[in-house]
Image (cartoon, rainbow, N blue to C red):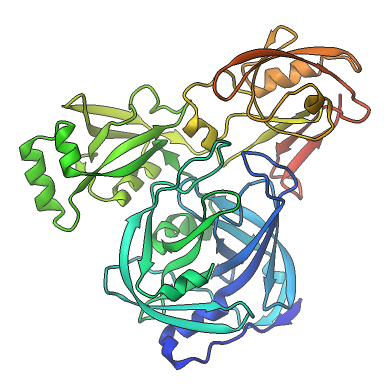
Length: 457
């Protein structure tokens, strides 16, 4: 074990929030493969220790982009130790990682206390952070507004934060920082100022309320794996005048205005994930009126989805109210298996892809192609769906793996594909197993790395 001392904030303006500086650590994440639309080799930022006894750290999903990654944390710019991924939230912009506390000797690491309260306009806020020269500093400000985040999808689908309220502050100085802990007058963290990924080269910063983190953190503190279920929809705010044009009755209008005098809005469904239980039951542009008998007036009202097997929804469709019972889908935690063949990487349709696709021609998706490989030479590209190998249907990853293992070395394989915009085609790929063997990578918690590789052709 190595003794480390985190820097302390001596600025008296920070008040009780000064102790939060002893909760901030640096996080580095390396990505060995380009999958799920992510082609960054690495990412680095700060994280906050939320349980010093268990070594639990909350970090932005802008840093931990994939479940297949190598994670290291640096404490006080003095000690670098590996960490493991414990949880990635499918919608809110955070992940929880864990380091081995036995690697640390005497230290002043202090776990941050997360607030359960929803910030309100005008609340005082004390942000503690590091400046560009790694010196501690404090910015005092007040909450100016809260709004629901909206990030435009990209052509190559990658993970986006959705269905989340973000907090914004009066001081423009906060925009100069990528990370900070925003405390209240009692020294509790009301939100984490962190980056949100828009594109591979463009981020935005905003405050993520800590109330989103607590359910998953409480499960890990009980030594349980967080279990989530999802409605698998993406919603956006809708004004009441637009809802009236969609068929909202006068009685419903009066009910909503009395229940929520601060915000006159409902929510409209923008996207529904393919292969989810809600797909085919709900439709794009459905207006959600209530969930389980409660008016949906705030984005947090959708969080009931995480703990229910089914939800009773009242929606507006074709200018009429409809009552629907919609089953939720269990969250699978991300990619579980990859197949490597002829220099290309194949995986099952991932969440961002299911959000942006209107149809799934197959359960096999080409997510990356190595330069100079047979797949690259014969124009098998990332974003292609694979439907057949040598005339054999490949509806899922298991059947695809079985089909490609039947292809002899140095022979041509006939690959039937469907492009991302649903244009079918047939390609031929000549195998070369000496340089580009067939292999698989499967998630396996019993291994040290959490993944198991198979290289048999």
